Length: 427
Figure 1 (cartoon, helix red, strand yellow):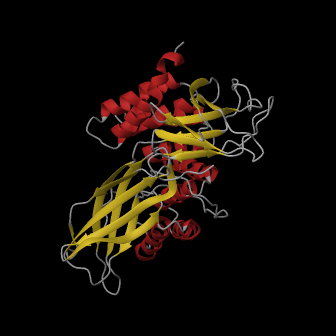
Figure 2: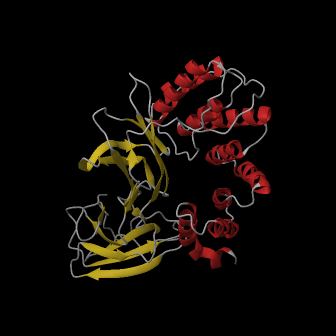
């Protein structure tokens, strides 16, 4: 299978055997991703095969439960075209015919296609939330903190690129590329930069759709007092935590990093905490875990590093580790939105859907206007094969955030993707 750029994306189905009675080959369920709804499907046959006289294209849009005959190509055509009315996953099955016979009969229910294709024509959603400067006393350099929100169903592991320009140096310059979508990036400002700086973020999904957002200018020369945080109490101590082995392929997390400025031994603990977050934002999760555990062992009466440690375990795909820490926090301090949502996301990754739904519904009991929780609960319900109820939750999320381009956009994208099946779901 391959995709070639041009007027139409081309999906190649390799080596379909021609015989009067033959079973279709098994292509292992590989999915190719394209961003155009107009695609061209080509094929190749064994060299000994006689010329192709007819191509019948069969298409499934419901995971091979049913097939429909899409069209016919004749007169020695080497490819056939397909137009999708909407985005989604489609399966393609070709029946080729020559003077000897045809490659197979029409596909049956449950029969695997020759090729799966994910058609995703919608660009991602991205919005810069804040750009702020944290000035440090020499010899430490100032740090530019960029935070954002992003959503797309088909993002890669590192889909973010960041750029900047200044008033005296127009033109975009690279700040960082291939950044994980963790919602935040800390950039050490070169000492030669002065004046106002503008930041641009670009995000690209697996299909190649791209979106961007640009910040307002921020004055680099203006000192800032750091990160403002809500006051925290001194709860009972957390147990000492040991780090698990590092894992690969980090998952996505929407949890917002949290810091504390009123912990005991503040200087050393704050430095280790900031260093841990610095490693986290660069995808250096094993180092981040080491630093955060040092903070927790140095100041076991502060829960902020535990939040961040759980978030990193989630990014490492260590969902059970994240769930254990969220549960430890809930047991000692009581449940809050962050631990409940974090637990729900980890439970979803572990396919513990009823438990995840209970965590989210507990948040909705105290915060019925929390649109993001409605959105998450809808995702859980979809995973529980309850699409009609999932749509009602997504509709509520969109209703609660008519002006929020992030949550409302995510809800509307889900409704557009799954809403067309409403009639069949309720039969």
